[in-house]
Length: 224
Image 1 (tube, rainbow, N blue to C red):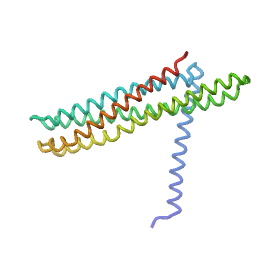
Image 2 (image 1 turned 90 degrees about the vertical axis):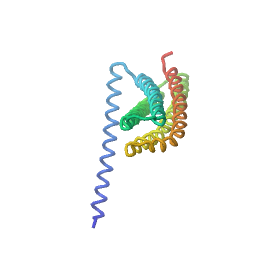
Image 3 (image 1 turned 120 degrees about the horizontal axis):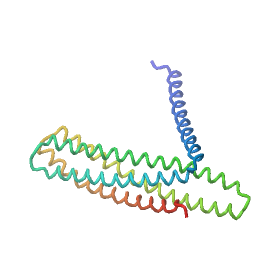
Image 4 (image 1 turned 180 degrees about the horizontal axis):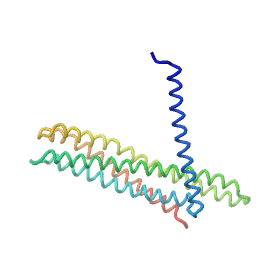
């Protein structure tokens, strides 16, 4: 019989461990920003760099998902040959697509992290103005930047979320082919192709919007 108190204590310990991990991560980020500030690299510069990196990751992901779709197209038009080799190619494309998706996700999280630090610092420094005119101008600039940032990050998340169903479908096809290396398997996958093609096209279009918004935000952050 499970001791309820022991179970509760264990749950509390797990929760404490998670909280401590988050605190340590936040502390590491804070120390990083402070160190960069000392060498003249400000949070605004870091954010600009991270948005540019995310933009590049999205462009690479676009090409990777197109490549995965192309490989699937070649598979369903299979007319003889080594199906085991075809499976390896399809699986390689799935794994590469998964890696691209993880890269995009990590880039978005990095932007969100520095954005929070940047806007917190900006808001604190606004309160240090003695000039009401300059204070108001800085507030307006911050609000404009925040609105653009929120629009950008929503666009990035929409594109990221569209990757999940495509990855699931690519994984399903890879697994099915792995265990059914025969011509009948190709026929079964042909029915899946149209759905995947539609989803990839939708993903590419959504990512194009996010990439365009990234450029607009980069232009906004660039020194005037």
